[in-house]
View 1 (cartoon, rainbow over the protein chains, first blue to last red):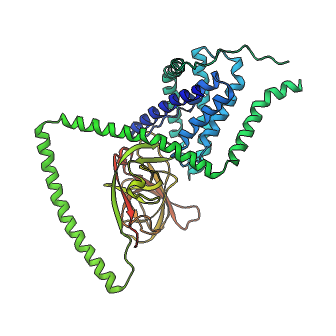
View 2 (cartoon, rainbow over the protein chains, first blue to last red; view 1 turned 90 degrees about the vertical axis):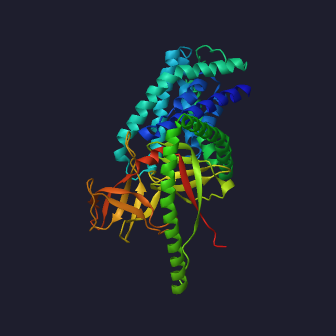
View 3 (tube, rainbow over the protein chains, first blue to last red; view 1 turned 135 degrees about the horizontal axis):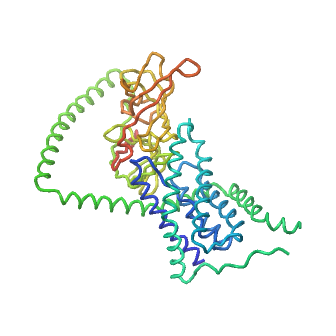
Length: 175
Length: 276
């Protein structure tokens, strides 16, 4: 439970930072989406239940104040967690570069999934390709830059709280 | 082998159960969760906006006394011109009241102006929203029009304990009844495409076929007052392109919105005054 709370605190911090950056970016017509960073660490290192709680909490943080149905981000984030956990036994998840790559791919998937839901709001989404593309590029570049720092922060926060992520289990074996 | 395939597909079964479970969660529970998470976030946005105000304050403190005197002089001139406008408004208000009494027509709805600082701007390709630092504590109501010195900002979409969320006119979720300036025929405005590195744009529908507009000769559109949300005559934007719609009965076009919408720091909420 304590690990979930500490983890949520780091997610809340990230949400605060991203929302402030997006606030400052509005005159340039660019918005950052960092969904992958909210689910990456927990999906790679936590047990399924804890990772899903983290995904739902992060999703709810994103859902409030948006015109999307409440729970949209939460469900999409939970889906990403399930997918990452399904393949994580094949990855060297303690390798920083691999973790960043997983987060980047997850962010791409989450961005496209949320866009697919949000496109219903638009009367003519055809003219928005360039905006969506530039948002995605900016998000992925920023994510690649800040992911190592944020992953280290999450690991350190859990370590300080004495609830570090459990050691990596051996490869999954089937009977 | 079947056991292995079941083991592999178990996470997706769980995902399906989660999705089904979420759909079955009562609306009341979702609403309580939404409000709780919003009120959890609100102090962060509000505190950050107070810090920005403090930064502005200290940056202004670095200005020279000469700058302050010049600013005070400009402000005095502006105040003088506003005084004249206020007197004219009062005269017009009395005239309207006299004519309403004479012609026995119902009184136009009144509004209370509530200035509010912007706590957070959330603009992306899909929606454009502001969080302002006033909510139920100042009597803000859902649907109240929001304006600034450049015209319409949007409409209050959500009201919380001490913050409110405003849907901008550039947001595709917002539709406004409008008219061309100097024309009484109604048309429909909707927020729409918001390109990167440029000002937001809107879409206009049901424009009379005799109207024309272009990038060099844009046409201003204002609120029509129909629908009862926005008072009539508030500036929305300029139509920069018009073309005949597919049915040939009307024209559709693109509206250029005020670029200051992307940098708003203060807005005014027009809270409808109750009849009683």
